Image (cartoon, rainbow, N blue to C red):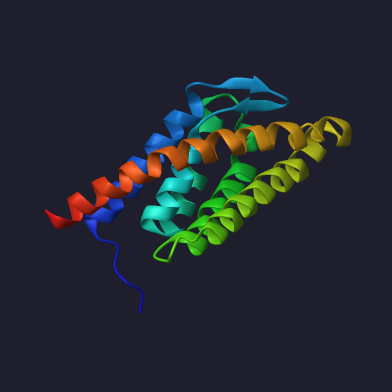
Length: 167
């Protein structure tokens, strides 16, 4: 039997999903066939602090909504799958475990591979092979921005989470 979803958990997932949508939309830095943003850091933080399912929901739904609202609806389905997979994978590797440097590096590299290969495959039928190759430049930039932002925010949020759980 599966564990029921408590209202508090549901609300936290909804808040993180909304935050991922907003940080994906603002600011948007045009690049390649899309844009750079800080929304992925919310996927990483949610997955690490709440687990693989909340990470997948936050990443998939939040970023697909941002694509729709930003005028990129053709990417909504690939984004739902790619960003959902990233949240799930990072959560599986880092939630509730000892966050050793090796596990952190593996989670970050898994996210990089998923986002780069995922969008490369999604862009081939849309833009052609030549244009799709741009993701091998833009995706690592996007990934690096969000990994650094998450790395900076994680210690602060971990302390806050501990205080909230005690009260």
